Length: 495
Image (cartoon, rainbow, N blue to C red; front, side, top):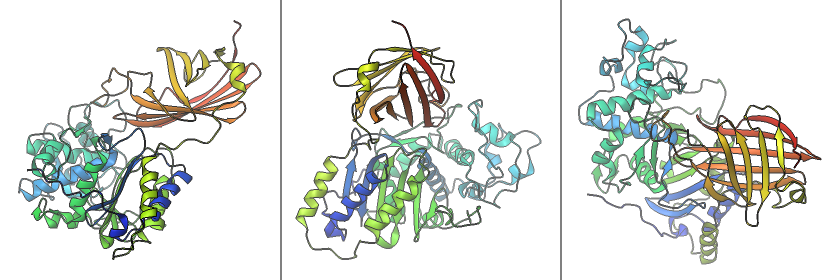
């Protein structure tokens, strides 16, 4: 039976958190140019604050990327609790159909425990290229370079093997197994799902799609040592091991933000905390000493400092300000917080909404020189409420609609990117939002954010000089938008 254990509507001061501190944290996110999608701050299992950046909302399913690894580890833990597997089992025994006759001794020695703590015998993900259509096969047929269980290396192929083991043993997709054993009890979304690998297994290393509230409920299971409402959903022994420093991960030899150790598909982080982390800054930061949880979704791919910035904003404004006892009521600050949350929207790249240059180039076609993007011709149109970038490629005529200094929702004009299964085209365009600003009188920047089952961002820079145009496109996305990367130049066409 489902049980809702998140209690909403608690005034932050009642939980020892100043409302103004939460406002300050949100302001700092904006000041640092972070592309946040949602956040939740909880204490003692109660929601102190929750917010969504338009167009995201509480019911929006969101890709969790590598937080999926923690879901996978949980499935492994539950199977251990049932006595169906052991962490000391050698992984090759579950894959007689994938192993060559001369299986390398290092691979043969790899145990489930080694994969859980990112100590596979490989120095890189074995299926790193989309040319492989059987990811499990690559794990057992790639040459390793060191003994398993010895040194840390972040290897998503190991996480994938773990989720395939969970599916082979349970006889169902690992997320469905988790729903049956745990997630339904905590009110997890029934429509939560997982992107599939090419051979049809779930992609437990990166593919889970669920809501922000789902993630908060899941993280609270670990913060509460596996016990929710008096029910032990997963053994305390496994939770303690998963959230403890199982392996030293400081391979750099100097202090780094992610060098505090690694548990079972869980990062050990600063100040005796542990965190679930996904690409783009999907985060669930658990602070046991404060009985506090911070959850967020975002797409800060390409921003190497974003993760540290989020931690710093959280610590400086919330963790260091929180008290163990309730604070005096501050209705003025609380009302300001509610107003601030109601106006959350995606970060806008700084610049002017319009420029005099628009009149000179509106509707004018440009013939483009040969370029990596294969764009032969482009034109800009500045309509009343939005702009339109049209361009010709070998794949046909394309267009991107963008708002003036604000995001316009639309679709990205490509249909061959992956759908529910990696490598299999969706045959539909991804949802996106796009905005354009003038950073100089003759320089237009169009920012495109993909907000579908896959997240990515594309920045299009257009500089105009007389009858000439220069363009540079830069994308940050995993396995798509590859056609949108590089420089180009062109000239106005005679009309």
